[in-house]
Image 1 (cartoon, rainbow, N blue to C red):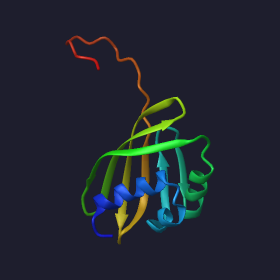
Image 2 (tube, rainbow, N blue to C red):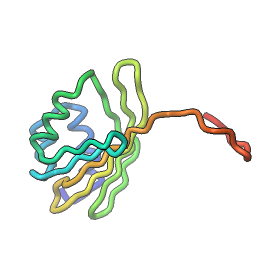
Image 3 (cartoon, rainbow, N blue to C red):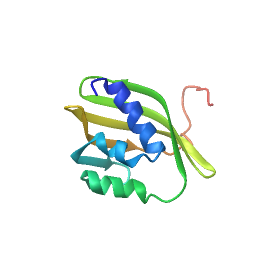
Image 4 (cartoon, helix red, strand yellow):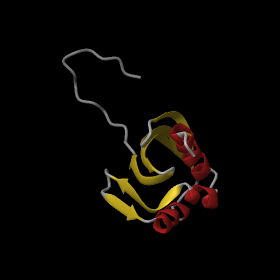
Length: 122
């Protein structure tokens, strides 16, 4: 797959569809999965597959925006699990058409501090 934007969309669609064979075919054998907020790291396609297959709950993912260049893909997506939902970002590193590194950011909403300058909240 030469179009990394398509690769990013496909990655998320196959993950959402639980099409494990097609999903793992996108991954390098030594793929690294990193979650900086929890400081968790998974190395290897089989361990990353097991992590996703056994993740608790009925989760769903929908891509909003995909940005890519020759070596990287950013996927901004909506997620839901039960009554909870939010937005997250996945950063993919690509080499020879395979995903070699996945970094997920799962930000949580919070109340911002008071500002000296007025801002509009949504």
